[in-house]
Amino acid sequence: LSRRCFIFSWVEILDAKTKDKLCFLDKVEPNATIGEIKSMFHKSHPQWYPARQSIRLDPKGKSLKDEDVLQHLPVGTTATFYFRDLGAQISWVTVFLTEYTGPLVIYLLFYFRVPFIYPPKYDFTTSKHWVVHLACMCHSFHYVKRLLETLFVHRFSHGTMPLRNIFKNCTYYWGFAAWMAYYINHPLYTPPIYGEQQIRIALIIFLFCQIGNFSIHIALRNLRPPGSKTRKIPYPTKNPFTWIFLLVSCPNYTYELGSWLGFTLMTQCLPVAFFTLVGFIQMTVWAKGKHRSYLKEFRDYPPLRSPILPFIL
Image (tube, rainbow, N blue to C red; front, side, top):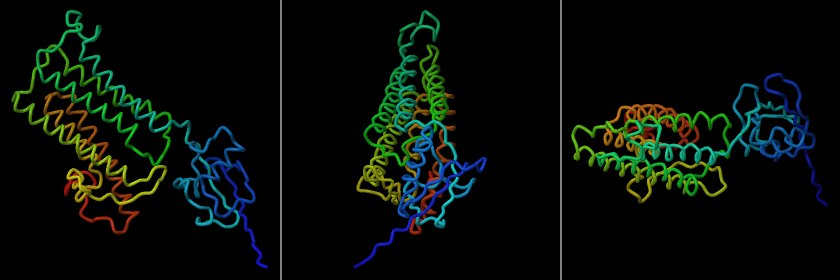
């Protein structure tokens, strides 16, 4: 007769700030994941649902991943973890839908010149410059695309983010949309200095980069099976727009930058240029972080790749 021996662990969870004991879990199986431990902790503290919890080995250390297994962590039979409250959480999908719907609606309010934006004599009038109408179509297309990608393309490795982020993100997207739309749709707006040729070149750049951005999002989606948090190295596919993966870690940001450079050239509007610059700075921060993460996680990561701009940045 064979005998099976069950070994259990004990888990204590302390407050990361005060070091007070918040919870003691006995007879936790060694193959339990951090996600399961969060669920156990939630039962004794209902106000802290799993998405709100940050569980770490050190009070000032990094949060452990939900899929981390207890027996694979550097802990003994009695494991001590530290808890930090991440605050109220909201789903990424909700945040994206909110921050992208705003610019779409706000821009159209300026485009149709609803009352109280411009002098009364311009209420519900239309611009005589065709570039203004083209800019509205491009801007609307961009955000409709983003909304559809949020609903049907993107797969998020993290289900939620802090609730406070939605106010910060909406202020950024909605505020810039209003600032740009005010000047582009203003009755005194003047078209680009080089006329139709400049506008056509800008439109080609914009559409090319929009298709490229969408192609990268599809390629990234196909890397991650539904419901999985698996990370893989993205490589070029048969789609020529993905071949930029040979040189760049985050080509979705590269194409996004190109789209807004095209829109800046099309409208020749200073607020658009400023929005493009701020967006470039933020996307560079994200791209560098993701690039470092790839290098750390994958030893065979392609050495030629740059974070966002080939050979430059």
